[in-house]
Image (tube, helix red, strand yellow):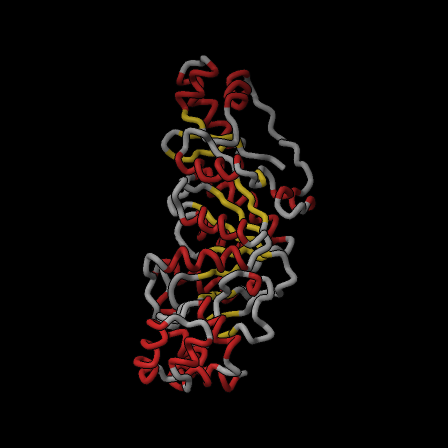
Length: 363
């Protein structure tokens, strides 16, 4: 198999052979080297359509298996093909599993629970707070966190997992080589993922740019290598919902965090819940890991006056603007501001910016 690896890598460079056609070729030919020696008739008999079959015969002279192997060694990466024993077994159940996985780092034990975490690139303070609240205890229990290294929820998921001492995997819509990491601002984060025993993976060859149409393609891998997918904040039309759809099609669990009905970023997860996704309000809702919730912790702070009690009562774990707190409590604005200052100092509430405050959840 290893002797045939260069040919797998070279074929991955040919744009005419996507995962479905590569699967057909792997079933029809005894080796990928044989594909390079095939005639048009052989390719047609394997189920390849005429246009990509003829184009491959024209372009295969420019595909060099040895060059691809040398690049693999230079990048300090490895490639896992569908024929390899260490190919993630759960990923093989996809209709169109990646023919080749380019990997930097170490893939976690496939018997560990893997959770895909996806959400908006423009995540709110609420979304990031929820992500940290859910992911930290799950990471400590050994759940592998899988996401896409994007801004917003993705980056928060990876970083929270690392902070908790867990293992995280980033699935990319570009090459895994250092120069192709996208966004470039997350190159340091990608290095931390590798340093902590995680992995960067992609089905795109080295040097592949992060083209727009690559991301829906990579989303099926995020869902496909996980036992469940968690959606935290997403607009009705977003890549996160593509990932959720891929999870449903693959028979995986889909979890969704409900959000304020006034927020466009809540429309995606709220709609998923309407369609049957599992609503998540605490860590144990995911995979039924009751120990993820931890013991209840009573607050040691008792409001020192009636103003503080009323303000605390008016706030919830979703953000409220100070004007709404004033309306609910019917207290003078100066009294509300003073009470908020004291409660914030006692870490009973949190400021989300823009004069929005929330109660800190206690467990």
